[in-house]
Length: 100
Image: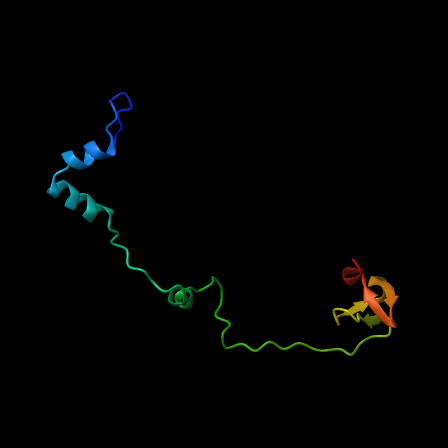
């Protein structure tokens, strides 16, 4: 819709008195959206990522015991290499990430 910025402005009261009932009904119908609200979880269920379907696959990971050059952080409880050792606090070893 083109707007003429040089035209004199009308106040809201003038607009309301000049608009006919048919124009108001037409505006109301235009303002209403025809889009139906949908549930986001339904949309997510139907969304498929590109690539192969891996839903039937099982993940197999070989778990190794803690090695001699590794330690368990007493703050985050993750196993780190000795090069990540930052300090020893209250008898426990702390990694660099937790020492910050």
